[in-house]
Amino acid sequence: MDKHMIEQRLAELKRNQVQGEQQLQKLETQKRELQATLQRISGAITVLEELLDSPDTPD
Image (tube, rainbow, N blue to C red; front, top):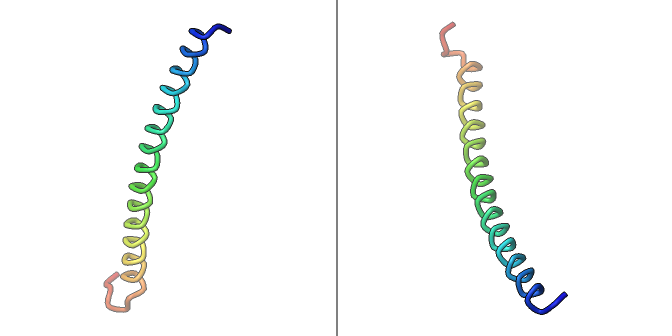
């Protein structure tokens, strides 16, 4: 491998690293958003279950 080929490969790997880091950041954001959504759903389930168990809830 000559110096030019090594430099090209190095530049390519650095671009790939940046792209990978950006993708990971997006995925981590999506994970946090999904966790928040699941937490809201869980809370809603709890409330509805409590309403069903309440003697004051009409049939």
